[in-house]
Structures are given as structure tokens and as C-alpha cells.
Amino acid sequence: MIDTPHHQANPALEKLKIWSSYNKSKYLSIKYDSYFLVYEELLEKYVGKPITFVEVGVLNGGSLFMWRDFFGAEARIIGVDLNPLAKKWEKDGFEIFIGSQSDPEFWDDFFRQVGPVDILLDDGGHTNPQQILTTIAAIEHINNGGLLIVEDVHTSYFRDFGNPSKYSFINFAKRVVDSINSRFPSVNDVKNAYGKKVFSVSFYESIVAFKIDSTKCFECKPTSNNGESSGAVDLRDKGTVRGVLSSKFGFLKKLPFKDFVSAAVFGFMAKMNSRKLKNLFN
Image (cartoon, rainbow, N blue to C red):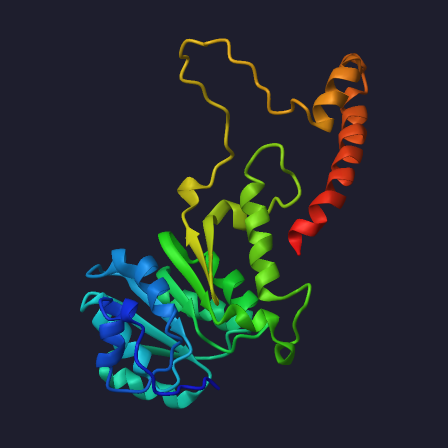
């Protein structure tokens, strides 16, 4: 439960449209104040457009009215909740679906009925399975140019949510970052579907946003503008262990098993550097 002491709003919030919409809502909504800066940054460009917006976690209904006021009359606002009582908000023009966000079958049925969406915001149960399974289910059904926003990800650090864990939502999100980087042709570790749909991932305090656009998710290739060379020499390895090894063992590149030798030599060098870098990760 969020503790909500009465205090003066941060001055940075007063000029935000989303903050105004939040305070206009007739029904209760509880949000951390830092979230509104993130909402405004991510969602401002969708205001006034005919988007489909889904929020997981309806509770008292206040945020449904906030999103309607913020996005405008053309937005289709859909709520998802476990509590059947949330269906009462349908009388106010919202679409409400009742089901478990950790149930893949629920999401299959949901997207069969709703179709693709532009934005899905997960403010549901905040457990690792709920956040991860919702993300997996939603990514394929978000339109290009859309967003998947998962909030309250600070639970990935809470013991009462089973964390820290190798399988926390935050570690899952980092895995998606690995997948994005695997679009570079020499990176082969994480070739999976996320790298084909997620253009980028933004990490904020307590919020992770996945920007979806398959048209921008392609394997990169080197290019050149074919300009005139000034004869510049690449000195990136000058004075480094890598540079010394390259100069002393350059002949190895001529051997038929050069790739294996190179990987062994430079892999050893990387491990030596890791010992020095370890302190920087504290």
C-alpha cells in the first residue's frame, strides 16, 4: 500500500498537463509524484490522437478518467483488472476486461477481442511473473510507434516480492536490451523475437518503457559517405595491452586458425581488465 502523506506538490509537476488531469479526476488514484514527469515525456505526443490505450490495474477508477482527460476524446481507454466490480466503469464509456495478467490465455483472448493497441501501461500486481508475462504477451500486439510501460518496477528489489532474483522483471528487461544489441551482426548471444519488435528500452526510476517499432529493428550494416580520406590513423589501442598484443602477435592473423587464437588471446586480456573494472561496478 502506498503511503500518501499530504505534502506540497513538487513545483516541476504544476506545469504538466498529466498532473492537471490527475487532480481533475473525481475518483481516487494513487501515484508516486516522479511518475508524472515520465508520463509527460513518453506520452505527450499521443495527446489528441485516436489511440488505443490499455491500463492494467483499475482499482478505484481514478486513473481511467485521468487518461481520458489527458489523451482527449478520440482515445479508446481500456482497463484490465482482477476484480469483477471494475466492470461498473463501463457505464462511463470505458472498456473493462476482467482476468489475470499472469495468465497467457487471458491475454490471447484479450487481444483477439481488442486487436492491436498503441500503448499498454502495466500498473497491476507488480510481481515478477505478472510483469514479465504481461510484457511477453503484449509486445507482439503493440502497433509500430507504440509503447509498453511497466511501472512500480522497484519491486524487483523488494524481498517480499521474492527479490533480488536472477529472474526479476528488471533482469528480464536487461535481457531485452541484450536482444536489441544482438541486431549488430557480430553479437550472437541473444537472438530472439524481442530484438525484432523492440526498438529501444528506457529505464527511469521505478518505470521501464519499451518503444515498439519493427520497421526500425533491422541488422545494422557499415556505411560510408565515400568522402576524401585525410589519412588519419586509428590510435584507439595505442598504449593498451590490446595494442601491444596486436603488434607482437600480428603474425597470428595469417594462421588458418587465427580466429580461435585471437579469441583466446584477447579473451584472456579481457579477463585481466575485468579485475580492474570490478571496482567500478560497486
